[in-house]
Length: 81
Image 1 (cartoon, rainbow, N blue to C red):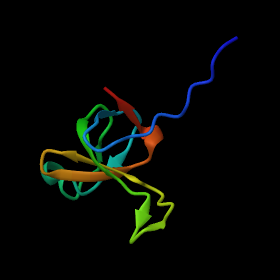
Image 2 (image 1 turned 180 degrees about the vertical axis):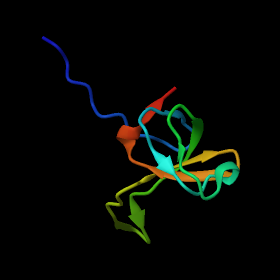
Image 3 (image 1 turned 45 degrees about the horizontal axis):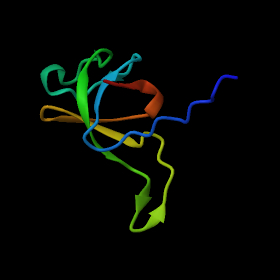
Image 4 (image 1 turned 90 degrees about the horizontal axis):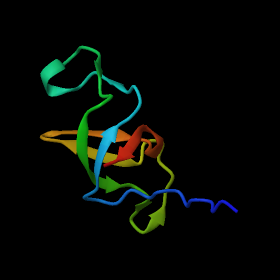
């Protein structure tokens, strides 16, 4: 019998790679231009799930830092390394 896997929960400090096409327009080296983040590697800075002790459900809860650049993602857009 196959065991069902629990969903992987991202934690601050985890190394991740963007595994789907996510286009941003505020990347510091490509300011004002469309830049696809797919394949970029970074570190999870924070996972937003509460605000002042109250539970929240943000659309893009995972904050990932790429050097000096930070971006918000859904968990399904990222793959753990």
